[in-house]
Length: 525
Image (cartoon, rainbow, N blue to C red):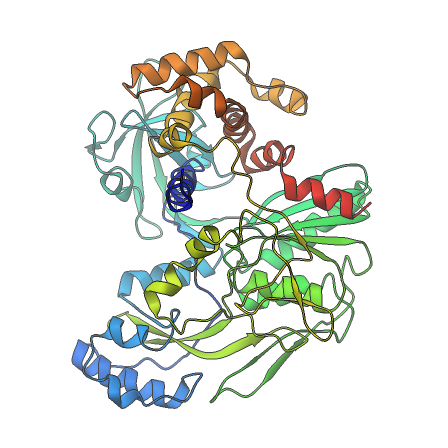
């Protein structure tokens, strides 16, 4: 299999398994971050007036010197793409979603679900949320949303879930079928703000080493981090693995607030600077919960912005060791300028710099499309799968001429077992379907929790999976099936743990065989 094909397969698999975790109703993750918000609303409402207003704002605020008047003949999106990849125009709904997402909560009923055989299967109910208070349980099937039948109708995902979302304070009635029950039950709940913790997992890897996984930097991440630290320290934690892999960023204030817990007073965390934006230094306030213990930070190619700020500070200040792969390279700061119709302009006004003066931002000189495909280029040239010689600057810090934070210890992507059949199973969602449809009833939560370190999905389960695949009329190449068997068996176990034990169980199971986590444990000894 050539490199390009293999990369496409891995990307396809990554997107398919993004679906495994489900999604919180009314909530979506943020990829571009680092925003501040202006208070002045610009009254331009039609596109022509907006272009004129945007050019005016660019001339006053943009990070670099640019002749914005040469852009006035372009559509808004094309105009902004000429600037940099992170300046963007947001239609009203997207602008609202962004503000809601950064707030660390969402308006909804608090349900994680999975679409199984044209049925909405409840896989998690957020404690104390509207659905939880109304009596919705894991394993329930949602048959009807108000008057709309959603089960068995082969409806598009948007139609199946869109009716659940709605304005805060409004009600929705879900007709559900409890697991093991024959009679449907109607539950009415009032939509409200549901807090979503950005800490996916917090537990001890061994008696001395704690592990905290952070999915993004939301409004309360730094506060949640303090609580997690206190809990782990009470259990005997002396060293910490902080996992920022696939963390796309979030609030700068949350990242600096977290840095306050691990850095000494007056240490420079990061600074920002732009043509119209004077240098602003962010210093640690001191008195944190974990200023002295050994620290390892895990990053990868999807760790961006606020994650890179924190990793860069830890590295430059010799506070800990960075493990994984080069981070994304998103070091541009946006300010949001709202328009009267609810839309908004997110314009780059400054750059992030690490304490030693390194710019985090990777190059975008080859244009928007090339920038979007840059992670694929890393795979194609072997950066993600083979050990690369690391460059050092004059102060002996790990750097890379293409941006991002380069780790102190490199851990490659393990592609053993990745083949066309395995990826096809991922794209078609066969493994989660099999777990939720079959295996979830074979293994109890108590059994999994008590035996996580030693139990594995057995050969009978594997044979039944093959029958399940055949029942879906998916061709099976048995050579590829056996080649991918170790991956498949581990995926089934991890998915079982997620279903029965939530996100914390998912990461506990995943980390048992995770190369970066193993490296972190070794490095902290």
